[in-house]
Amino acid sequence: MSDLRWTLIEDAFPYSLANKDTIPADQSLYDYLVKKASEIEMDPNDRQLLLDMSQMWGCYIGDAIDRQSLRFAFLEDCCGGGMNLGFMTSQMLIRYTEESVVASTFADILKKLAAPALASANILLKTLVVGIENLPSSPPTVSIKTEDGKEYQFDAAVVTTPLGWLKRNLHVFDPPIPGSLTKAISTISVGHLEKVYLTFPRAFWRTPSTSTSTSTSTPDPYPGYTNWTSPSYAPSTNPHAWPQEAYDLSAFAPPHAHPTLLFYTFGAASAHISGAIHGQPPATQHAFLAAFFAPYVARLPGFADGDPACVPVASLATAWRFDDLAGGGSYCNFQVGLEDADVGLEALRTGCPDRRVWFAGEHVAPVEEMGTVTGAYLSGEGAARRVVAALGGGEEV
Image (tube, rainbow, N blue to C red; front, top):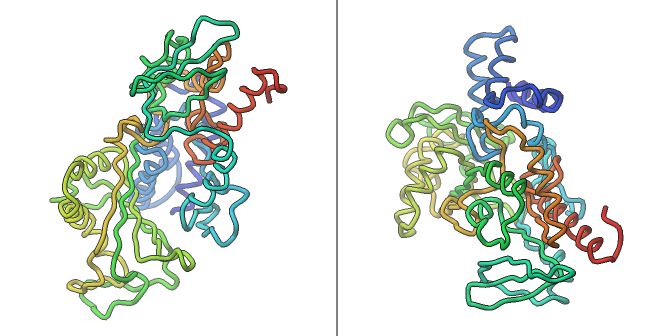
């Protein structure tokens, strides 16, 4: 069923690209899947299960699948390895199907990439930019103003702020940026993906339980990923039956393995969770998270009611929704209602060359890497080439 789900979603990408000029703006990816599922001869319960499983597409875009524009679904065709950077070593990776996941963090990679800048540039941290102004000079000069009242002048600027921050801070540009850019920034949507980590005394889900009352048989090996589709058994904590999914971080090779489950949440569910814990003391946050995810933890292999190993001892949750510098979201997506998102993306990639101001970030990435770390990196390379060409150092690529 999982294979069929992904087959239908992958089929939607070329359909979207071939028909983007005629697909109604209000048609969603979910509409497409409902239609395709209706054409397959199968048991009605299986068909419903297939559609329930498709809801997990929300973890890729940070919003419900019925908010995903079918017209621009082809812009989301980046899931085949968006994290598979060529310089990662085999010791740093664990492979789920065709995707590679960093087992530790991006710290070592970032250290290597940042080394030239750290050695050659003046980097100001914890410095809030409040103005990006073009001074009346020839060639153009870019003046960057900071919250502490200081002003810095440059030959060119690359704005790498998240799309959500740009949406809220278009006023920092003086004069205002062109209408095509303003429209793109205003209309391309931002997802609300959040992550919750629950750490246990040990990875009980990899060990058969001694209890027979609440446990299930343990697969060998444990698959590493669990999907709870439309759970109706948690009416007090999840009355809307939001689907849940978790990755097993104990599956990594040492020293990166640890008894932690990583839950992805999106849309209304992520809003509910982050809203409930935002601003609360750590103990209150932990109690809420442990209670919210308890019904799903209880259905894992090896679970035994009353076993201390099945009770989380630590938790951590992101809260991008309340992060002003992130713009209150995670990364860009393309929701129903968009008319010309592809035109807007091209405007973002072009930037303002006449003002020597360019943009970079996952929202300015090549189409095949939109919304990924790789995409953010590649967009920076693209902006750097444009800067070099504009300053007479070579041809733009």
